[in-house]
Image 1 (cartoon, rainbow, N blue to C red):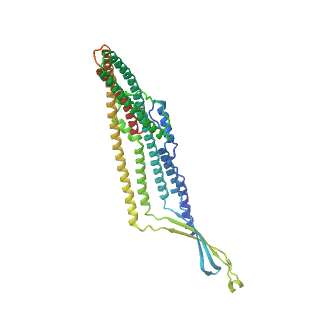
Image 2: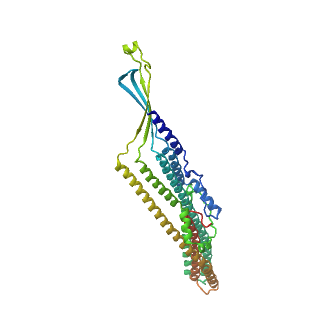
Image 3: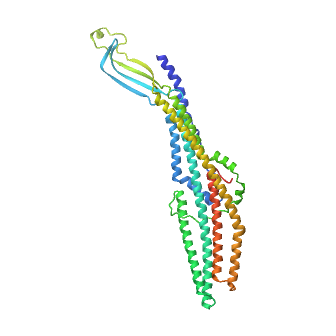
Length: 442
């Protein structure tokens, strides 16, 4: 029996030690996030958000917690010490048995600890990819907020220019009315248009406060922290002509962190199936014990003490668990299989969502690129030319103030729409970058 015990322990301990020393692949150094940002201010905002955003701190804490699970599940169960006290001593030749002390250690069946370690590693890998996905989310939110803030700042500047022009027209209308060459209706119309512009200016300023607070919140700063005026670079409109859906789909499947997390969870489910099947095999318990023997106190033992009088006895034991409840074990295998199927279907949904998001943003970018070219090459020059012609005709008295104000309103609307489309193009680029999970455009 002692030889059997020594053989079992000698065979199990090296296996357990090797399993406990496995290092999960997810313990790699934290990678830096690459993203498209021409503006130094935008890059600074994204870097601050990645360093301070509470949601990202939560994700990295969960990832590190998952890593700390690996050494727990690959370690042996705690050994057990058992003490037994004889209520009535058992007399033996060498003396009465007083009490016993037993030390036992359970050893899971070969491969169980290894599979448990692989489960924990895959969970950590999924947590790592989830953290990376949230980084992409935060970066996309910062970029979208930055580009929208840039539009609002530009719109405020354009509207203030329009305010100055309308104030000039109002003075001209008042001078004409005072000299008898104009109508009071022209003055009232100019004042009404000026009031409309002021109201629009107030709305833009309110939007700026909201967007600035949103940007500060993403960086874990006070919503009231000052954000300087934002001026995004011109959008690379030529990118829309180079987009290829098949290439973008491939990039997304290779880089989208949600899909990588789903792959890790599928591998975890496959390992769960293997572990559930391992539970059909018994665990082994090895023990060693000491029996405390007292010296003989009977007259015969005192008169002629036997050899080894009062010498303690040592015991060894080997036991196995009995996995006899087959229904429970079979249910565990089925559960693991169903969870694997669920993870596979979840991955398929992620791929479908990826393809939809990519296609949606590509169509949006191509449409916006065409609109930007139309506005810049046709509508904006036409609106400016019409405004200049109307202003010249107004100065010579050929048209009234209503025509002049209409031309100014059209020019303002065209300028604001052009800036809105430029900002929307940059936002769409940020969303496409988020959809494929890597920097874009390169």
